[in-house]
Image (cartoon, rainbow, N blue to C red; front, side, top):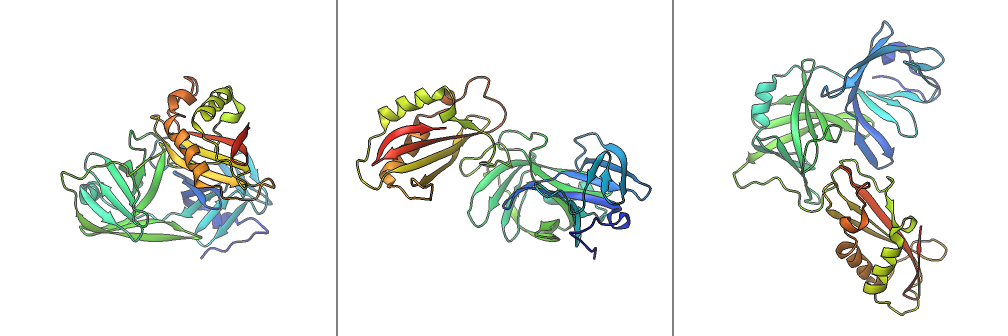
Length: 344
């Protein structure tokens, strides 16, 4: 077991070896897969590349003294830490790696065993289609999202790469990256991580896919697999669209004249890369910016306006439309159920 310290850097001997990317931590509950590996050689050289080979490998040098140096980047104490088999680089948005152990597997046999079947773990169901499509079902919420899959060879080992969206498999848009530990006709062992250690997650065979099994999401699905509401989006209160929004609210919102319906309401939703809308969210606050629940007669009207009138064609100019998702938000101020302002 590797030791760790928050007061000093790990030694060169502790860091030497191959590390597989696990996740980037954007927030306490917001993680994105990290599809890269780093090979730290004892002679002071290193290689940095992607597990699926989608980006050209970079070679440079590294060293450990009072600091850890990777190429020309120097990391002060506490910025590079080891705990069990996980390596963390950085503190604000740390990159988390796990120590790699090669497990030789045959790709042709693995592809044959995985394809055309439904596999299930304690939390997920994977519908793996022979044409490269894949559907992920969250067993707790029953929500389904559509993706694509491929097997990537890393040395003698195999990784199951799940990414893309219901429309295409765009490079860099990863959902899951699992190393295959073993497989049989009825069981897959997928190596990932949980908390501060690596875990092996078993997927058991449920059944073969039938011709009627589709690969469609159960509801709205953003195109990005790591979409966060914290991402910069289109703030309607700060744009020329504010006049149009005022006109829509004046036309379709019917004031609920009632005491206790004063404060601020923030509405958020997402327009995905194909113009579909979803992920609607309403937050209410009182005059002191403390959380507050407004009447559903107020919030339901506002949500209906978002769904039915704030369409992608109305909201986004040609320059703003892209292959990416666009988070949209606006904030309104109410006094006794009447809208008095749209805030930035």
